[in-house]
Length: 228
Image (cartoon, rainbow, N blue to C red; front, side, top):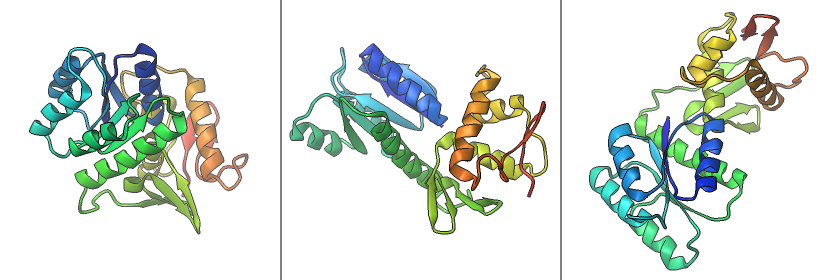
C-alpha cells in the first residue's frame, strides 16, 4: 500500500515517512502542494497525508484538485492550524481525518490504521480477502486485527502481510530474503537484526508464550517457519 506524504517541514515530513515505513507502507514524499499533485498523478497512491500550510499551493487547494479526479481516495489533513473552522473546511473539502500538530506517534498510527481499514474495505467490498488462522489465532486482514478467544490484537499493515505469508506456506522455512522481499519490498536492504527484532516484537503480541513460540518458530541458521 502506497502513501503520499505532503509536508513542507523537513523534520515532520521525515518523521511521518519513518512512521509509515515502520508500519509497512511504501511512501512517497512531497515538499509542497505542486509536487504533491505531480506525485499523485504519477504514483497513484492509496491514501494521502496532507499538510495545509505549504508554499505555492496550500493543502486545501491540493485536496480540491485531487477530489476532482478521485472522490474516494482517503486524505488525512495534518496541520498546525487549530481553529475549528479550519477543521470544518478540511472535512467539507472531502478530508477523511484531521490530525493537529504537535502529534504523538501512537495517535498517527491509530489514525493511519483506521484509514487503512477504510481503504481495504473499499478495495474489497465483498470480503474476498478472507480471514485466516494460524494455530489458535484468527487474523482478519481487512480490520488489521487478530482474535484469540475474547482477546483482540491490533496489527500493523506489515504484520498482517507477514502472518499471511506464513499462512500461505505452512511447514515451509521462510528465509530472510523471502520475508524481506514480500513484506518490506525488493528495494529494501535491511540487516538481519531488523527482521529478528520485528519478529520478536510480533511474537510478544501474538504468542501465548513468546519464549516458546508456537506460531512463528525459529529454524536456526535458516529463517522462520509456521507448523500447523
